[in-house]
Image (cartoon, rainbow, N blue to C red; front, side, top):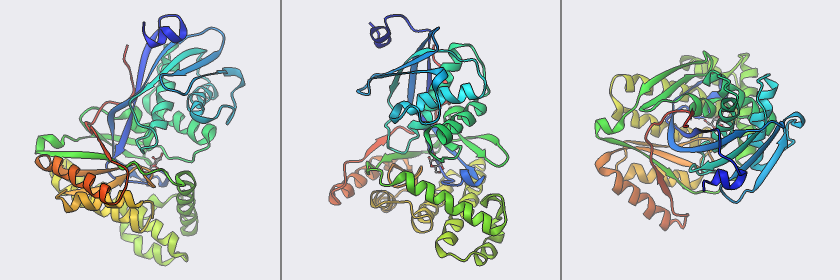
Length: 376
Ligand code: GLA
């Protein structure tokens, strides 16, 4: 008997999925109207569902989280907490946007580690949204679903995140990185196939406990907004790379100055990375990864020792470039390496972690995968 039948006592109407992501470059620029370049991962959240007629959404997980249920008519921001805030937030935002979704039985399964900076929150929001819409045969543009999922995370869950993760989960395609210009709200699919060049993208979960991540994220965002206000621009994207020194000289606070320098130089690195990828010069993207990490460590100050040791070790063992990816304070690093050297570089990172008495890191398959879809 399937797990769904075991829990809900009847066959499902369909199955939907939404993936996690890693960002290649452009960290913490999305809420500054910047540029990002994520790929979707093979790891994903899967939701098996059936429609209900009583306006109640029942959500079960395959793990230990238990079953929760809520009435669609009585949802309001914060009314459901903990992990269930994400499915509840997705239902809430769809109702707010006047989509005629109804009650549902939903079974959530995942092979996407949570707390590893791989966007399991965005994936859960997006998977729930596509399942609730799909159960009523409502078709919505993927970028619009992404915007709604971000609104749910901002307003229902209360996390001031940007739009990168939701767009990656909805709009990535297999074999490509998603070049997303947040200001223009435009996307371009950039072919990304390291193996074709004899390369590999390593994704290593450093298993660092996420320390103060929510408060620090909000603080970084606030510094950026404060800087934009001081400089008289709507967002830091408005500061051209050529005008960076002038902008920095007009800011009074040294910490804010460094935050701005990260954002403006990081946006420039995304443009350079995309130009190199388009020119087929993937190896040359490596140094941009490494420069991005230095900027996140020294100017944006969101790395932790585990991330720095993993990056430094990968580089010392021969990686072409390496950087932390995601929100920071834990999570994963990515490293661009010659495929033949991948095993030795992973071994070097494991050895360095053992020497530092860090937890044992794990690596993930980084095959660029498609965004959210219906499976059956
Ligand atoms: C988190 C947020 C994203 C983005 C990244 C940093 O993943 O959810 O919106 O800001 O951090 O690039």
